[in-house]
Length: 253
Length: 317
Image (cartoon, rainbow over all chains, first blue to last red; front, side):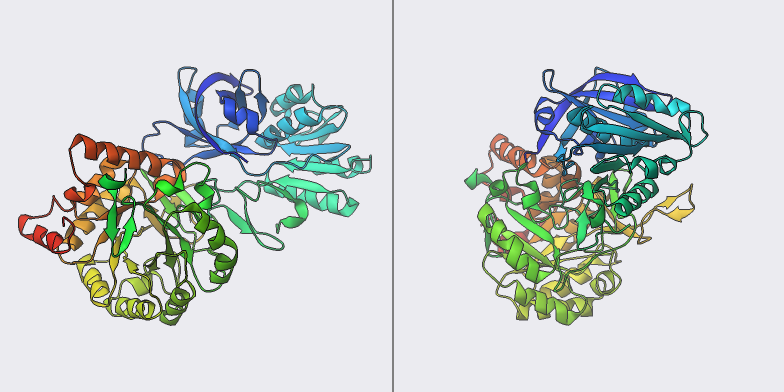
């Protein structure tokens, strides 16, 4: 697996809702190598007094134009800075890092919430409508712009919202158990940890193999610093290099 | 490149004075795709203890202005796993390997040193100053009497040159440096991280799971340069200077303060090709300044009377 350090021009900065943005980077070599579930590790070239990179799961690639898309939400200083960058700016991008999803499935249900839907979007684009449906959870209707992004790649879109303003009222768990009886041979999930733990539990009960994509505070992204390790069922797991995608049964929640 | 940058550090011939610092470069293999490892002076590997160690719970790393605060807690796979599964691969990289060692007692330091007294390891660096472990670590690293004991225990159990990595979390760094030298340490690494902490004002709680952590990065560089400068005036053994080095200019500061070699740490975590660009820039510096070897600038910032010590070491020999 080749890791590449690229200086990537920003080609597009597109708001998706009030707090979520799509960022398109010119990163031809990384675009060629990256698999769904892998991430890129990003920093500004001149980042002033904030040093560390920030990991983002890749949401899409375009091999012809050599681009990598990430979708991010403004949640801290770094993502706030990202929103101020435009097509004149360049980022330092390290990737592709980590291990992606195992795609040996026939019919998969992708279960995501928030920006966890970003790496699953890349996976959906690879699997296509023959193999993939998606169940997406959000707080309210306005967060579910994701439906438009997924429409070309999946057969069915199931939606839950906490306030019931769109789809089934409740979390993804309000809809998941009945969906799991409909012939899926694989579930992929990415989102808040309590959601993934619940999804993994439901899949275990139905004996459906499930992959989860974990997120941890991370420094190097290369498996060197051990900032992101966590306890696994059988051994210590490095989220950056053993993951971020794991089989659900490898993880000690 | 050989002639301008090479250096003999406590009997270890190094191609360059640029070392990858322990804990920031894994076991070298993690960087092999991004950095030509054979170009490095040496790789100092992640601290090893006798048995596997899980490290600290909770969040382990956070950013501070121009710095990184970490509390990994010396997670490592233990000596046996390292010798069987990691060292064979490391030996294929053709770069000198310094083993950073850690014990939970004076005796364990000796046992780890003995376990790693093997081909493929060129020197041992005693991690006597990690602020992130409750037994040993900082508690051991701030007492000159204990430093003496640990250095002796390690020397007794290894044929390799022994480097002692000192804690900056003390009032008088010179006193510790002298103790390590007197106990037989062949070189000194200055400095380890500075004890610090950060509080999340939204949750009212410390950010790190371990509450406190070690501060590193450019934020600590002036402290490190000062300590190298002070110690270089009082010891004859060579010093490896480290603390926030990000580029050739930073490395030159440490060397002018009296460091014979330098180590790059935190910068590896965010700019993994730092050691490569820094080495190239040091080469260019030597050419531009018409130096016969980069060692010519070691200690040039020291007070006049103190430079003789460096000559007596053969630094400028």
